Image 1 (cartoon, rainbow, N blue to C red):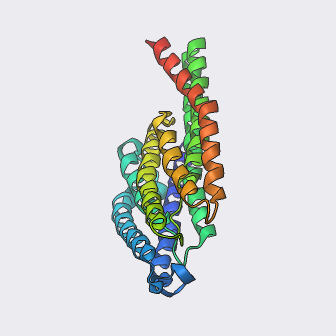
Image 2: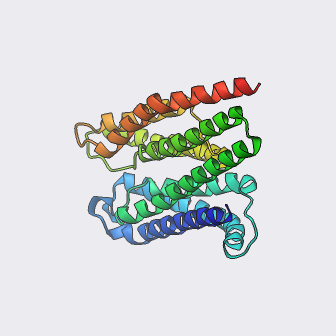
Length: 276
């Protein structure tokens, strides 16, 4: 478990460093790169997007300064990292930088961003492995069929959680320029920025619960918000351009939630009632 803990820390550190570096380069170099996304283009979208990215970097840097010391100590020494005590700060730092990642800029390097997100997802996969191992160990210690059944439920819920979180995260729309006629352009900008400011915290809340317990929240509110905000951004830009990436992952998120999320929610409730 100690080795898994170190790998999880390394994955989180790499997520922070890679995304921070990519977004910092974006702010520095995008002022005259990227055509319509260049800051000198004069498009009001760019002023807002670059402002959000800059604030995201400052907030992310402050949060990294807070969480990094203990992380590095645990990576390079035998000292255990207290995830329970630090999960909230780690997730806040991750979401602070993610706001900047949701802004498309002239110097955006999408492959580098996906590498960073890949390390965040890897940390989630490791948390699921930990959860499954913990559940198996507790069931073995208890030796009862009830404990074994609950361990299977917990392991299944954790596996479903990491898939569900990944799909939902991919369904959060990146903010792009639109060249539609007014007032549709203004409405689209307002909706896509609102989508980011609502869905990034939603993902953060779900991620925090997942890191803390090994299982995320399966409340119907969260996929409903994703359907509302991500769906609205797709619909409002449909005539100009279809955002297939968000559309596909939004559909997968909803289908997966209906197919597995509700099932896990029911099993967890049944397990709690049975335990009572």
